[in-house]
Length: 577
Image (tube, rainbow, N blue to C red; front, side):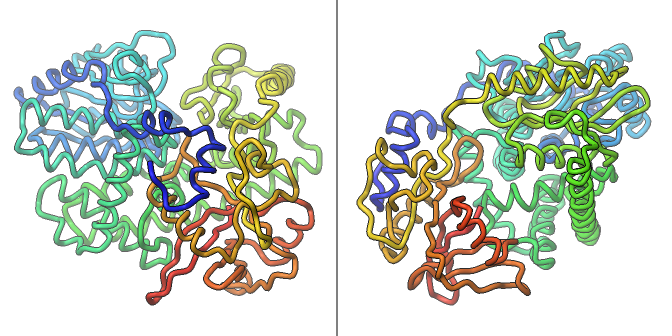
């Protein structure tokens, strides 16, 4: 692969991303999902018999997007299809009561299909089959070793040999099923099904799937689709079809978020991960009705879509305020030594829905695996988070207590009849296991390259201190005034985008002189520095004083690079991370 800059080949060399690695990880070709045609046969039987099929989704962003893909796609393909609204207050998974509720809400339902959930929901799905329902499972999570009672299962994590890897999200799984169904039985509607990829792309980023292989192409296409949707009238999309209703809902969402100052064009992977996903997840975190987001996409009326989009923004604002309050209380309890199981286990009275966010905060501060738990009548419920190098989920299932379900480094957790001695012992075992698993040298460099005010000499990967981030004053790879090289590198970054999980955006270490002039934006909330003619640095939610203190402490200023265009003028912009 040819690049405009001298810096990009150096960055890739430091990462160990040679041409063979890039060729393998950017190839979108993939195998067929296990049981794919069998699933399509089961769906065809449901379709031809006119049975009512109800989708049972999870309640995070991947589950929401998978539900939208399934509802719009199946109805577009001529199914009689309903979409169940899960109850976040009941915790992860499908329960027996969800089956009973779905039967009440959709009288005459004869088939259920799950999405982004189901592979470990044994009691609920057995209950459905006992009542004579067809049970179809689409998921991407790891099974728990107990065979699932279903008429057909499509899950790349349950059949890794068939698909080749388990790195796609639940919405992507469902979309592939619909694509295959259209190819087999209804080719005239394949173009409409293809348009649903935009939702699968959002879910891929939201669920932190590796941006390798087919995921890269999917997300790139999804981002292009989103930018097109954001610039058209919602009314032009609402053509009376289920797919049109779903796309019009996304268009309204983008329009309302722009109007509220929460979204700026162009849309990119950061928009998905930092704006759209947190807003959608606010509903589960606050235990609000999931039909707020579902109806945004399923309602045929544009006026209703605007109402639901506004309610989503309201929930997102409430979530931010609540997390800030509970995070401060958690920090205070640590200082006051009211956390006897720290640093591996923290207790809180925060609502269940934000426990994962609190666990993320603790992980970010300690860098070690953590459980954040809320006491219940007979035990605890909560969330676990861990750094990339520790498979916390598998460890808990093997050596821990309770029940964990989700991903290796992010999952829901519950334990019954747990004593103080049990928690003390569990905390110690987590700490010991993490210390044994922690890599001596970070597997991912803290910085990919350095930018400074002094003239550099391009360093080799083996000699560059910036490759590890261990030196306080590494020799810079490029100077702020070399706009030609910086613009070329920004172009190369754009070529390799989208960036995301296991495909991290190149991180610069900014060696900014202490005498550099800083200014502020939004009443002092954000900091800005002009580094050279046409080169700026922006640090959101940081004051110049905080930045200078960080520079004095020896901590490097981390930033990504991009190009900012305003009124025909292009500026190199570093954005603090």
